Image (cartoon, rainbow, N blue to C red):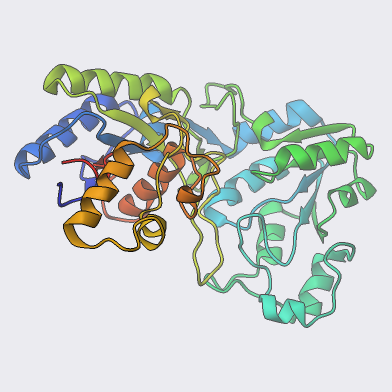
Amino acid sequence: MKVFGTISRGVRTPIIKEGDDLAKIVCDSVLNAVKKEKVDLNDRDVIAITEAVVGISQGNYATIDQIAKDVNSKFGDETVGLVFPILSRNRFSMLLKGIAKGVKKLIIQLSYPSDEVGNSLVDLETFYESNINPYSDVFTGDEFNAKFNYPVHTFTGINYIDLFKEYGGKNTEIILSNDPKTILNYTKNVICADIHTRNRTQKIIKNAGGEKVLTLCDIMNKSIDGSGYNSKYGLLGSNKSTEDKVKLFPENGQELVDKVQKMIFEQTGKKLEIMVYGDGAFKDPVGGIWELADPIVSPAYTSGLVGTPNELKLKFLSDNKFRDLRGEELMLAMKNEIKNKSKNLKGSMETQGTTPRRYIDLLGSLADLTSGSGDKGTPVVLIQNYFSNYAED
């Protein structure tokens, strides 16, 4: 029996810049690493590439002015509502500056006590003691600050109401309400800035009388004056690059993953699975923040990563069906059970407690945790034995 299960290794690469041949860099980095560390590659090993370096190599950037021009082309010289943006300097500061620059006046509607991904405007215990009804109560930014004695974010120490007012400029007004329809008291022209609930928010506002109601997917979904773009997700998944530019979510990552898979096979004879990954969809237990600011975990992956796990819960079998077995007898019984399991275990008692998520989301979380977001220098992750199980020798 194999003594190691899933192994995840961060692979160091050169610093990747715009125009670099990323497929070659990934292949060379992985093959050099496994040769140096005496690691054997196997069919169905996974190479995961962070979306950041994909966007960088593609030159998929947009400036504040380009964002402003696109917004203005879609709304003209109108007052525009911006509903439910996330409270992130990295994710939203440049977008906010660009959107505000493209409109006559901007009304920002924040959700409270936290944004969609868990960034809190106010400590939750303090909020719960306030007797505020979050389903109906509406505040101006000044009223909210006064109510909670100028609250600041737990980790950053920043008051995001004031910060967003500063980013938006003098023609920006901030309100707080969890009802999307509130924005219609100020304007019929709206950008839904939430990520995973954007379609629901857009539908609610349109049904309530919104006239021009877009999502962030509709901004920078085509090139503006030679800019980058993302045809499917627009500004969603973007990150601050410089003080006047953002890096957009990568466009056409499928071409990259297919190319890397082909190059690895030509050089090793092994068919690896390749994916691009962004945020891993896990939650910080202290700050309550979800690592889920990208629209999806994986925007591109090879066909072998389609599907979800079909696994037995060994603990359940050990405590129930095989409760009277121990040692080698238990091991052999468990192996036999795994080898003869149904191809579709969905709903069976033996799967209770297994994780009903897609392979790409599970692998993306593992890769995101492995690579980190700072100075590890490992934008590529090699994952091995992920598809093996206890029954394999």
